[in-house]
Amino acid sequence: NKEEMIVRLLQAKIIPVLRKVSPAVFMDVVDALSAGGVTAVEITMDSEDASSLIRNVKERYGEKMAVGAGTVMDHADLSEALKAGAEFIVSPILDESVVKGANAEQVPVIPGVLSPTEVVQAIRSGADMVKIFPAGTLGPAYVKNIKGPLGDIPIMCTGGIDAENAADYLKAGAKIVGAGSSLIRKDLIAEQDWSGLTKEVEKWFLQLNH
Ligand code: 3PG
Image (tube, rainbow, N blue to C red; front, side):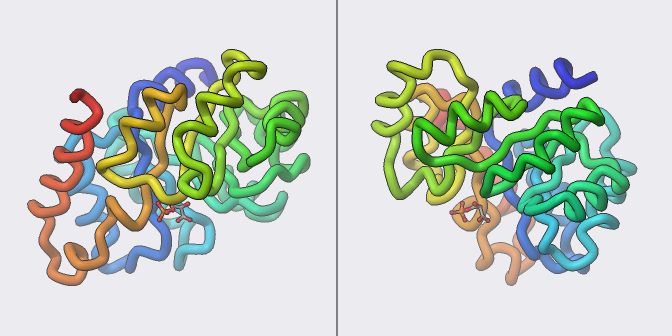
C-alpha cells in the first residue's frame, strides 16, 4: 500500500533519475545501480518508450526495486505512468490534476516546488512529499531554513545533487535525494562500464555514512 511504498522510498535515500537512457543499455544500467545498493529508481516520462521501461524493471525486480515515473507533467503523463505500473510519481512542477489523480489511485506523489508557499500549497493539494527542484541552485542551507517554520514536511532534493553534497542535503533535513547526471554518468554508460557504475553508487552511499 501507499504507506509501505513511502517507507521504502525513505529507506532508499538516493533515487537515481533515469532520463533518456538508451533502451539498448537501460537494464544494464539498472542492474549496475541495483548491485551498488539502489532500491528505488525514477524513470522519466520523456524517455523513449518510458512505459515499457517501467514495466520491464518491475517485471525483473519485483519488490526489490521501487519503480517510479518522473517528469510527470500532466494528467496524460500520469495515466500512462500508472497504466505501466509506476509505484510513485515525481514531477518538476505542481500540477493539481497529477496530485489528485495519484491520490485517487493511492500512489505516492512528489511534486516539484521551490518557495515556502509552494511547499505548503503542494502538501495542502495532497502531495505525500515535496521535491525541492532545482535544489542545487539554492544549496543545503535552504532546506534547513525552510524546515524551521514548515516543520516536518517530508522533502526530497533533486537537481544538482552530487556525491559530495548529497550528505549535506540529508543532514540539512531532506529525507531523500534524487540524482541524475552526476550518478548516471554518461562516460561510464558510453564505455558500458557497469562495474564502474556500481562503484560510483557505492561511493555515494559511503559518503552518506560519513
Ligand atoms: C533531471 O532533471 O534529470 C533531474 O532533476 C536530475 O538532475 P541532475 O542531473 O542535476 O541530478
